[in-house]
Every structure is written in structure tokens, then in C-alpha cells.
Image (cartoon, rainbow, N blue to C red):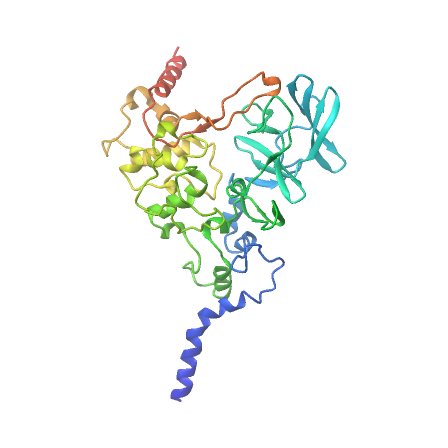
Length: 402
């Protein structure tokens, strides 16, 4: 009797680990190119359908997609599909059979045409890539949302039409979830490309998590997965800093190798040397800009204090303002000193006053023929007092009462 009882207890103790072995034998439709420890984002939908469906509409998930008429923001209609360089040079966006192309012309003669293969970005601007064999290149024309029209692609000389700007692995580390770089020749394994930022890019490999909770659906505590709330403040910041830091002085491995819970700095308590907000560009330095803010220094806030990455919140200014008002109030004696002058306007303008949109010095886009040079504006994450922005709000309020 004692032997049977001992054997039973041994079996029970081994059961929670059995799911690890089953992952090698699961009949999955397609193996994840990152390895057997990854389950693929589609596996998250069964248990997290609401979060999954919401996340599909975010800028992170859509930061790279196969290019098509449904995913390309620009128009292919006649008179709206041309980017003029001047001096007889132009690029026309064309549909040929079932494919979409950018075609270069010089004095009416076609010089080169390449296919839209990948659409990157879309909130501020959208850039396009094409495959040439196993290598990726940037197409010369992008779409600029502020212009509602086509614009030159970053990094290209407006004096000539060129299709030869290569896309390096570093570019893809922030706009895709994975691609395998070839060892013996330049380029990538096209079949290994995982578009967008998927669930496992932020939460880490999930095969063990999926297998365990499939076997034990009543278990409510997340097992074998990294959750944001389980991280230290430094780990939370670094999880976003992989793509939103941009500091060259941060020693880090490939973004594809980084998993939530890792730290970027050798000394996790140190800050990068280039943390002066005056020298940081708003396009890629959100992490350091926030870390240099008094709000950050004097509190325990992190990126997740304001951002829910599972929801599309990019234009919800009132929601972000409420995040400010949750911490700043008359009761806490840290309320806005301009509240009396601002009146009800304060409920929508904390962000516009204290985190205004600033022009990036790294990205410059111009309209066709160089007629319009619109700044590439990104909201700064250095929370501070900007008198010129306060003046704009007060002028707006005054005009409303005239």
C-alpha cells in the first residue's frame, strides 16, 4: 500500500512538467523560425482574444506588413501617383497586373522599376521595401501623413532617382519580430521574416506557457511567460528602450536576442551619457527623454504608466491628459499653476503644453518638386515647461472669447 501511494505521489509531481516534453511533438501547422520554444502570436488568441484583437490595430503590430493596396497609404490613381524630382526626373506609383511598383523616369523614359514588397510604419510616415534576390532595399518614395501625399524616402538624395539604399538587420530589429540574417552572403532568409512586433517579441517565447495552460486551463496564474508587472522599473524601461532609445552608447546585443527581463546597460543603475534632452532627437530617443524628466525622476513612473501597448491610443490626447491629472491635483499641491487661466481647456491640453510635438533632425521629408518642406513632428517625451506652447494655448483661449 505504501509503495502504491509513493508511486502515485511521484506521478503527480511529474505531471506539471510533462507539458514541456509535449512541445516537441505538437502537430503545429508551421514551425516558428525563432525555434521550438516559440508558439507564434496566433496561439495567444485562444485565451487572450480581446487583447489579441485589440493589439492587431496598434502601430506596433502594423509596423511592417506585406505591401498591398490595403496596406499602402498612398494613392495609385492618376494625378495622385507621381512624385516629381524636377529636371525631368519623376517616380510614378503603378499597378502592373497583380503587383504594385515604383517606376523611375528621366525625360519620359523609364529607367528602373521595383515592386512594393513590404510597407513599414504608417502613423507619421510609411516607407516601402523591395526584395532583390535575398537582399532588401528601400524604395525611393515614401508616404508622408502630414502632407497626405507621397514624399522622398529618408536617406535618399533628391538630386537623382535611386533604388540602391540597402536595408540592414538593425532596421528590421525595430520593425519586425524576426528575420534570419544569412551567414555566407549579404541578405536574409525571406521565409524566416515575421512581420510587425508580435506578442512573443515583448513577452518572450511562449510555447511552454501555451502548452501548460492548455493542459491546465483552470490555472489563472501565468506560468512560463514574462509579464510586465513582474519586472523591475529598469527592466520595464529597457524592454521599450530596445527600439525607443536610439542611444549609440548603450551596449546591447541584437534586438532579436533581447527578451523582456533583460537589461541593456552593464550597470542597470547608470544612465547613458547622452541623456541631455537638448541633444536627443525626438524620433528615436523617447526612453532617454522621459528618463531626463522631473516627473520620471521624482516618481516611480515607467512607460506603462501612460501607455497600454495592447490598445491603439496614438491620438487620444484626452486620455493621456487624464494620466497627468491622476498624479497632479490640487489635493496633492502639485496642480498646474495655469489652471485658473486655462479653465476647462486643461482637461485636454496637458500633453500639448508639457510634451509638445517637436521636429526631428534625423528624418526630413519633402513634397513633390520640393514645393513643401513639412517638419517631421514627434511628441517629445521630455516632460517639462515649454513657455511657447503655453502661449499658444492661452492665445487660443483668448481667441475663443473674442
